[in-house]
Each structure stands twice: as C-alpha cells, then as structure tokens.
Image 1 (cartoon, rainbow, N blue to C red):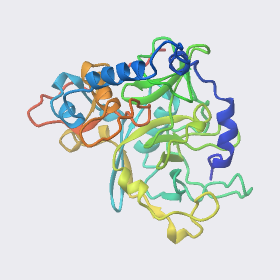
Image 2 (cartoon, rainbow, N blue to C red; image 1 turned 45 degrees about the horizontal axis):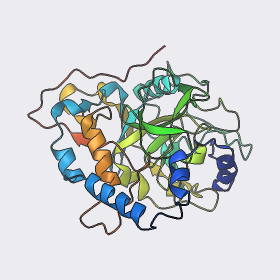
Image 3 (cartoon, helix red, strand yellow; image 1 turned 60 degrees about the horizontal axis):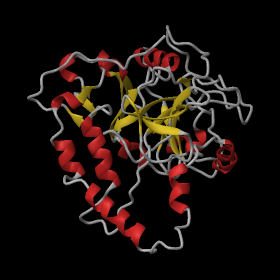
Image 4 (cartoon, rainbow, N blue to C red; image 1 turned 180 degrees about the horizontal axis):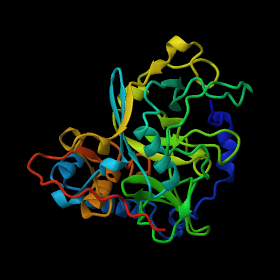
Length: 350
C-alpha cells in the first residue's frame, strides 16, 4: 500500500510554502497619529462592517439562487462508490488531473474497485481505499495485487499543478496562509501562485487524492483517499488531487479509526468492503444522480461569500473572514421542475 506523509512532516512543508504579502493587514496594524482619537478609526470600521452585513441568510441565498447559477454534474465525471452503509458521490476534476481522471474512469469501467476495501482511517486526517493485497512499499512486501483492467495504465505522470493561465479562478477576498491566491475553480477549492504561474487543487475536507509512494510519479488512481479532518494544506503540490466528495462524507468520516500505524487497519476483518464503484455515465439515464453544484462565477456565489464573512443573528462575533476550505460550493439535487441541460464538463485546455 502507498502511504501519505506523516502529519509530523507537514510543519516542515508548511515552512517552505510561499505566502502573499499582506499590505492591508500591515496598514491596519500601523499606529495611529498621536492627535487622532484612538476610538475614532475603530468606530468607523465597526460602522462600515455593520453596513456590509448582508440582509439575507446563507440558506436563503442558496434556496433562491436562479436555475442558471447551478451547473449539472457531468455523469462522466461523477463516481459512485457503494459501501454497505450507503453511497459516496465523488466529482472528478479533469481540468487539474486529466491523466489520473482518465485512468480512474478506466478502472471504474473495468470493475477494478469492486470488491476492494477501505484499508485506512486515520483520525483527523484521511480515509483511504484500495487493494489490500497490493505491494507494501514501506514494508518491502511483494503482494498479489488485483490486475488492472484493459485500458487502465500502471504508470502516470504526477499532476500536482497546472499552468495558471486561462484557469477561471474566482479569488477569495481574504488572505490564504498557504498560497498567494485561493478560491474556486469549477466549484473545486483551488490555489495559485502568479509568480510561478501555477494553479492546483487544495486539500480541504472532502478533497479526494491519489495515494502515492516515495516516487512522485507512483500514483495511478488505484488507491484513493478522502480528507476527513482538518484541512492538511501542507499536502498541496505534493500529491495529485483528483476531485472532491459531493455527498456521502458521513459514510467515510464515521468509520472506526485504524491502528497506530498511520491509521491502517491491523486485521483484515476490520476493513470495510467496497461493493461497487461506477461512473454515473455507465448507469441508465433514469438511474443517474441528478446532482448540481452552485457555479462560483456568479453574483449568487459572491453574495454567499459575503454572508459567510459577515455573520449576524446568532453570531455574537462576526469573523469577517472566510477561507478556501470553509467556502465550499453548495450541492443539491436538481429540482424536478428544472429542465435537464446538456452536461458540460469543465473546459480542459490543451
């Protein structure tokens, strides 16, 4: 089995992560002139913030979003993993990991994942699934891995990032500690660095990545994991992220935790068997889940962000801040009175 880096190493990774300059924070922290009354500037800010508070709640904004502000999830990008407890719906991200997504599709079409298992549940980190009989790189054990179906590749390039040019990143207004820019692309949490000209998917709660070994190009999509704890952003740019869970996180996050060895189950009977993994496009049209994701290039999304930043009502203190991992794009089942649009995959530029 391939393992993800220990959490203890993430602090070292974080120390190497580039961050953006913070001119607005620096300006706010500057001392006021001696002649200025200390209470004058904070009072003005408080008034401005109070005026900026949205009149509508987040629930109301989502409920009244125009039909055009929602996009249908392409059934060729929707992976359905059936567990004994229920189904997990994963949207794949071909814009960011085209080779891995193609391989995952081939694996799913060939029935590769059927009968495999969830092999690892590490508290506040990840749930990981794959072939329990695969080679164990760390232990140096040669296993009896399930063969790949026709069309699936056993070697892929690492897909940690893509060129930033042309990527429709809706940038968040608040500072991100892990990247100079952070926001949403096609509803996926993403980050970018204009200095390097690269963009990548962020490790947030629900993000799905391809487990790899020591070699950067050792992931194939045969082993996948979903983040079930605090966002491990130190893994950004170190592992290929292939998508995010749209629904069914409760079936991944509520499983019994594994043993002391990075959450891997110690005994075979502890593993949870995977009944089936299939693409929605492989199902008859009337059996496909009709899921929609709120578009993040709309006024509705901007209003929703402001509502999340400026909290009122029950909140005694408004955070005046949001981040890429708490600003998740809402998901819904398409209302029955909404006409089915032709599924549109996020554009992939060659």
